[in-house]
Length: 315
Image (cartoon, rainbow, N blue to C red; front, side, top):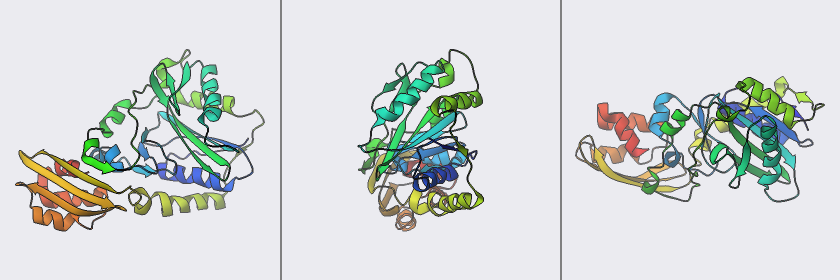
């Protein structure tokens, strides 16, 4: 078992770091701890528009990052600790083999954690951790969150389940769970830095090597970050094909908005509303990329001061 130091809080870099370690360090079992600045991390097969309040994220400057594993959407901030296990395995995906030592370590730290559902860890009925996996050629990557002192109010404001009925899509939907912070359930108070140190002590042997990437290795991580994880093609272009339709009231008048998207490109867009130029809307939307900046610019042309409200309708 080895661990590789990563002090970055850049969510794009950290996804690239994890993938680089997974693809490069092939001869060792690996355990990582890392943190992201405020960001939303979506599963590889998810529809971002369906999972989160895109307009609210864009306005707050919170980035969306698509990871390489499946599963649901999670909110990260510096009150959350992420862990990664990379191990060799001869079998299928098995959550118990990886969750058991994590739960045992949490119990040793005085946290009454238990497994809940297939891949979650909970205190009582409240979720403190979700996880996902990837298996390639007998090499298993398992990663998970540990909500320690995360801002749960932001989580509630930026995620949305109210739009599910507006979508027809095969993309993976996130499960709705009530969450809590580990800090609220500690027998002995500690801060997040102490929590990470003590957790790492529990998870890796005393003689475990602590490695640091070379300058050349770090350059490869940065290349992967820029070419893949920061790219529109990965973040939005991989959105599963979907049909969207929503009706209601916009700016005091009835509205019906509908469009399709495939490989991240909008088609068949229609906005029926007395407050919006429908012909101009179709001209601007059809052929455009799914992208909050694109949609924000289009909404400013169509709705002026009500642009944010229209963007919320469309994304």
